[in-house]
Amino acid sequence: MTELKTTPLDALHRRLGARMVPFAGYAMPVQYTGIMAEHAQCRSKAALFDVSHMGQGVLTGEGAAAALERLTPADVAGLKPNRQRYALLTAEDGGILDDFMVANMGDRLFLVVNAACKDEDFAHIEAHLPAGVRLAVWTDRALIALQGPAAEGVMARLGPAAVVLPFMGVAEVAIAGIPCLVSRSGYTGEDGFEISAPAAEAERLADTLLADPDVAPAGLGARDSLRLEAGLCLYGNDIDRTTSPVEAALTWTIGKRRRSEWSFPGAARIRHELENGTSRLRVGILPEGRAPARAHTTIHAADGTQIGEITSGGFGPTLNAPVAMGYVRRDLSADGTAVALAVRGRMLPARIAPMPFVPHRYKR
Amino acid sequence: MSELKFTKDHEWVRLDGDVATVGITDHAQTALGDVVFVELPEVGREVAAGEACAVVESVKAASDIYAPIAGKIVEVNGALSDNPGLVNASALDEGWFFRIEPTDPAAVADLMDETAYAAYLETL
Image (cartoon, rainbow over all chains, first blue to last red):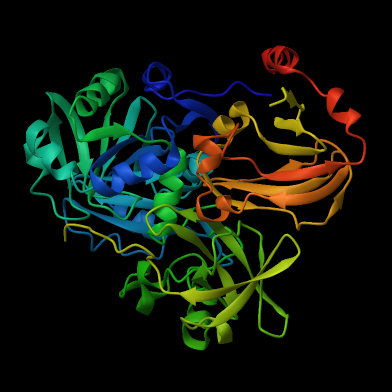
């Protein structure tokens, strides 16, 4: 077994008594006090997550946006300065290589990609850059997410310049004197900030944020239950190389202009699917009763025919009920459709349901 | 009340007369985290020692609960349906899972006592 990597906040996690687990090659905190409490903390006040395992990089040079557009269906060139966008890296066959964030920082594009994909993503991007565009992978940075309704108030005290940012706004902001790159975004459905900071200052930054009475640490466990309630995809579960953006109901990430140019990897399949529909779609699923239905649970029609599979499933602490998402046959994907989930040899009733399960509370 | 006995699967067993009550240990509930759902066996079911006969689900994952001894399920803890958190709050008491009429009550004596279980936990 290879040695696990650690984030710049490793000592902090151990000091806070986190339960550490391996995730994407890193030792990461899955919980500190308990997933339910940490989930509730994020929905009611503010939670601090270490997401330093994620990949951060910067593209510079003339034509950086055009270069990135050769790898994603997103409108990167049309991204206004100090704005960020959710985007997909697509393969030539239309599958999804990763989902990521791209921010226009004026003279450069700032990228945040998934931890498990970062080496491949950056190699893929690097391999497709024209002369004059350079990728710098930031390996000496931490990424801290501060999420929840109290996050704005905390930021007003510690990094007031960030408070004026709207949802998906990005700016360089000093927090407690530490130069940070802050975006108003997250992975919980709540208002909040993602803060990129120099690794050497990360622990001091986290301690400063945690000293606020409204802030408590939260681990990957709560991060997963929060994003599932918010209907947000987890790469590797809900989207991967076999799912297309149209099947994944992520058509909205494809820029309008890009839909007339069709100049991105997988354009042929994606165009065909946009015009003719797909055979399956990603949907929300609400099991009746209290039993969670986990990933890989098969989904069945009333007559027992298998019509799909759950890709993420668990318990939603805010809903106080099980929640799931997965792919089903398109003709049975309408909200309210009754389906059955095969859990431990029994068929549990469930319904196709709109997402998010818990309304987003972004500051638009 | 008789003494608690323990299994390597982190169940506890308490034999009172000819009925054994079964639950999971404090170590097990801590490792699982917040319990959100418990699936209990049918009353009347005959189970073999080591047979999976209940499921406990935390926010993150599902885990099997095994019958520590062979016998017949005679009662289940209905309170867990409404309040699965009892498993966390009171693992050794109100969070019990089921009661079993042992095929061989002497089988309970063969399980680990508290000292042996504590020593076993040290080896994990």
